[in-house]
Amino acid sequence: MSRNSLLFWIGATLFLVATLVMTQVIGNEYPFFACYVILQFIVLAVAWSILGGYAGYVNFGTSAFFGIGVYTAVFLFKAAGAPLAVQIAVAAAIGAFLGFALGLLTLRMQGIFFSIATIALTIIIETTVTNWRFVGGAAGIQMQRPPVMAPFHSYVQMLFFVQALLVVLAIAISRYIQNSWMGRGLQALKDDELAAECTGVPTLRLKLLACVVSGALMCAAGAPAAMYLQYADPSSAFNLNYSVTVLAMSLIGGTAHWAGPVVGAILLGATQQLLTVTISSEVNVLVLGVMLVLFVVVAPEGIIGLIRRVRRNRKEGAG
Amino acid sequence: MFSFDLLLDAVVIGVLLGCFYAAVSLGLSLSFGLLDVPHVAHPAFLVMASYGVFFLNDQFDIDPLLAGLLITPLLFVFGLVAYRLYYETFEKRGSDAGVRGIAFFFGIAFIIEVLLILQFGVDQRSVTASYIGKSWQIGDMRIPFRLLVAFAVAAALTILLTLYLSRTFMGRAIRAVAQDQEALRLMGANPVRIKQWAFGIATAVLGIAGALLIIVAPVDPTLDRSYIGRTFCVVVMAGLGSMSGTLVAAIILGVAETIVLTLFGASWAPAISFAMLLGILAIRPQGLFGRRS
Image 1: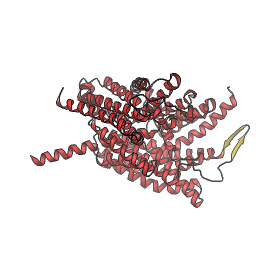
Image 2 (image 1 turned 90 degrees about the horizontal axis):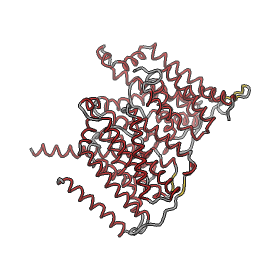
Image 3 (image 1 turned 45 degrees about the horizontal axis):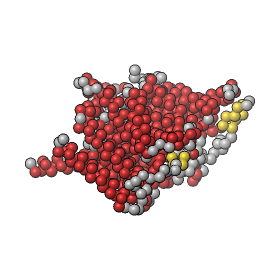
Image 4 (image 1 turned 90 degrees about the vertical axis):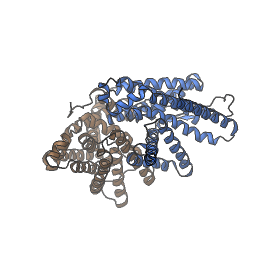
């Protein structure tokens, strides 16, 4: 194991221990309620970047995958009373399948056509769920949380820790892909798909793989949300706001490195929690939109790009 | 249960509705179809124009169509500025414009949506005019006047724009820039200025289109989301940049929507345009009247 990997896994372990200690020490539920949302967006942004950042396919369908995750959990819980772990695992499997289907369907589409197709998929799935009576239809469905498991004192604390586990899983996968041949292949097909194909990069397989991994992680991140809110309805589970938020987080953080979406999600997620509490949720979307446009225009490489540029300048100054 | 009368009803209403869809898609057919700008914010611009019409109608009691005409110059300038910004930040720099260009317009769309919510609230808004609310009775069929108005104006708008693109100097220049930008540059023309002009026209058309939108049905700030499906469906089905194709494609969509609405109920309506769009993209990406094969 290289020094970098060692540091990464030590960091990940420390992070998990810290979250676990938090659940044991802090009695107030609110911090978990707020931090859960930020963790959820870290998973979504990291997952989005695997396809959107490495491969350069702008996916507007984050809300489709998220919503499918939510409704998989709802369905499993209502039909069989399945425990949380099963809900998440099945959601991930369905997400992987859906990602594969999306990949197959959109093989020939590039750029804006791919993006529009993902919006289309979102609305079609949302409409189907709206017309599905068993999971509540348009009116939504109430969920009763099962008793919490030890060592946690409340269900929200448990969901918080589970989401923290998902964060570590998502980042580890994203980091692995970035550093392996897959990351380099995706990078190549982002720069020039035809040239990559000609030089022997299996672009088709890589694209499908990115769709599958990204989809599975997004659905897994959505599954605990049903129990978090104790309520699910199609228009909020499939809300396009998830897509734009995750897109903004990834692009603002920077998509060239796995740390970009993490930084973006923490920064924007925290700002949003603050704005929603202090001003209003409309202003919060406004700030998000303005920051997205601003970053795309002024700092196309995101925060990671800015940091790299500062470092390079410093090196040149020293040398 | 199947009834022939019901089907006939659906087809007639569908054709009228289709012409209206053509009117709201014409701008996108220009900006996305001819100029290749990933203009996801087109429906948001459209809804914004509707709110402009609502404001003039509500405050000064101006007829919605006249109000649409009044805001047209403003929209034209807005379009010029928007394209300039897009060009300077993305097209000029070249590399990686795809991802960020799409994100740029997506962001703009959300900003417009939120500003409309902050200014006008989330409630549905509608306009008042003498021809709204009445209908025309033919036998058993009742056709709302507002749909007929939308139909007539939409048809006129489509014909005007087709004539503009085929008969005027600037119109031909726009089609030329869509075909071969480099050739135009070699002829000594400035392709960027022509594209900017075309984007201005594409946005200006939204004045009338926005008026029709709010005449046909009440408008709320998030309406642009369902019109992403309708407008892109029409433009992609038409084959990018074909004006007459836009009309035909829009009528197909209109008829499909009303038939599904009649047979399966309103709750399936939002998915139709998106499903058709997805189908076309997957099976025949060049559209029915494609300019590229």
